[in-house]
Amino acid sequence: MMKLTETKIETKLSFHGGLWGAILPFFIFTSGVIAIALSGAPDERGFWPVLLLAMGVGLLLVKDKTTYSEVVIAGMSQSIVMIMITAWMLASIIGVLMANTGFVEALTWLSSQMHLSGGSFVIASFIICSLVALSTGSSFATILICGPILYPAGGLLGAPLALLAGSILAGATLGDFIAPISDTTIASALSQKADIGKTVKSRIKYILPAALIALLAFGIVGLVLPVESTSAGQELLGNPKGLPMLLVPIFIIYLFLKGKHLLHGLLLGLWFGIALGLVLGLLPFEKLFSLDLENFTAKSLIVDGINRAVGISFFTILLMGLVATLKASGLVDRLMEYASERTNNTFQAEAWMAGAVGAAVLLTTHSIVAILMVSEFANRTGEDQDISPKRRANVLSMVVCVFPFLLPYFIPVILMANTTLSGAEFDLPSVSPLNAGLYNFIGWGIALVAIASIFFGYGRAGDNR
Image (cartoon, rainbow, N blue to C red; front, side, top):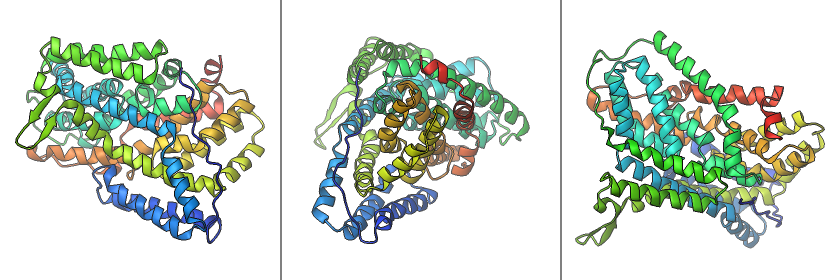
């Protein structure tokens, strides 16, 4: 089992204007991200310039510019950042592999065989996206793979469009919380020194109530909302050939439950999926590797997968550098000391953990950076109150799987809203980020479960065994 936490930045930085000078770059970053997001930023790449601007402002305000530069580089180069980038890269490749071998089309074919329409297709979309998210470990990949297929199909079958968008986003949220190869699972478990396989097993008791809430909500709201298309009854496209690819996520989950290393599980799962796709004739060899001699480039699903991970990887690298400067200012340590002095029991410890990571994710707009930002505090506070690593990891994950999937200025919600543009060629209107997040009932379900867990102790005894 990997036991790795965030590298502690020991250097201290002083800013003109004191702590306000240290905070100002983050206000610039957050304000810029919100403005760009609400204007329709397509992905994380749109946030790169804002991050560099915030870093530049920090450089102007800091007193020792050489030390500031060293702190930024140290924050960017932490081992756990490299672990997350490796996970994104391999998980993205697996997502491309699953898309290229017809996995989503196979699940869509199942829906057509069950003669689903309208509200029932919304529930089917939620289940399909949950399976895809569990398979790929990526909420982004799930939205990008499923959205362009399921949104137009559901719209033509009479599904309420905002509810349909919410169901796709909900499935992506479910996978982000519980998939063993999800970045949230990996970051929360490793930062709290918890075994990934055991942590995943412990999350079943949290996700089942949230999933039940979501299914009931999708069913009830689907009956209430008006149908936005009268094209019900059109045939869904699909093909059952990709169903055997379900063995790929099953195999990866098995490896993690057996306690295999992160790289071991992801890399072996990837090669198993490639071999299975080739043997079954689902993966043409040219998809695996081919040369474009005219343009002097190589083409491969592996290249495509890595390209998908570039945006989030560089966003994380830059943001971790900026976070390191805030930590080096002493502000984070002072806040954590304040919280530690007021933590006298398990409830208070878990409430402070949830509050700290919630504030961090709202400040950074990045769930993984938020987890890493408070990981040391969660470790120290949890150990003082005998809270198990699994429980700490679960508390952190529940909180960071709420805000980024509900609020309209976070990337998953923006990405889902942009994906609904795929309905334009079928004369289906798009859905706003606000409505996409509003109808993400898994996000609301996890929020309710998190409240029950912290205030009433739900799941605490099981996690501490």
